[in-house]
Length: 262
Image (tube, rainbow, N blue to C red):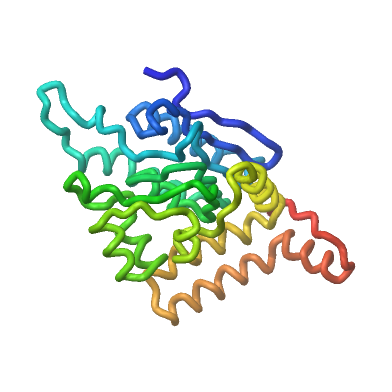
C-alpha cells in the first residue's frame, strides 16, 4: 500500500489536495478514496479553510478507477455498485456540498471517474495539454460519478449522449468551447493560475459563495417559483452578514473589501 496516496498542503485560507499515484496516473484505489475523504473532511472542519484546490501529481489528473483493484482473486470482477455507494457517490456529494468553493486544476488526462470528480468541483481549470474522456463504454459500463447528471447540463443532451456512448477523448480547448470547463491555460501556468484563483476565493465572502453554490445545486430540482424563494431566503440571510456590511462599506469608500467569511 502506498504511504501517501493523497498529499495535503495547508495554505493561508485554503488547502491544496494532490492525488498522488503518478505511476498509475492517479487512478483510484480504496486507499486513495479513504485518504481523499479524510482530507476533504478535515478541510471542511477547519474554520480557517475557505477554499480547496484539487489536482494530480505527475502527468495526469486522474485516470479513473484502477481496474487492477476491481478484479478479484478468482479473476471475476467485483460488484461495481458497491464501490459507487461506498466511495464515489459520497465523494461527489462532499465536493458539491462543501460550504466553500472547490477548484480543480486538471494537469493531464481526466478519464472516467477522474473526469467526473473534476466536474463535481465548482470551477475547473485545465492545462492546454489536458484532456477529458468518459471512458466507461469502452469497457462496457455506464458513466457514473454523477456524469449522466453533469454532462447534459454542461454541454447539452446531444453532446452528452455522444460523449457517453462514443467515449471520445476531448482536448482541453474543446472542453472549454463546449462549456464543460471554465478555462484553459498553458501547462506551465496551470498551478500558478489555479492557486491565484483559490487564493482569491479564499479571500472572498465565504458565506456568499457557499449560498451561491447551494442555490445552484437546488436550481436543477426547482421550478422558477421555488428558486425565487430560495434566492429570497438566502439573500435575506446574507443581508445580515458582516461580509455584506464590509462589502457595502468598501464600495462606498472605493477600497478593496476585507472579507472575513462571516
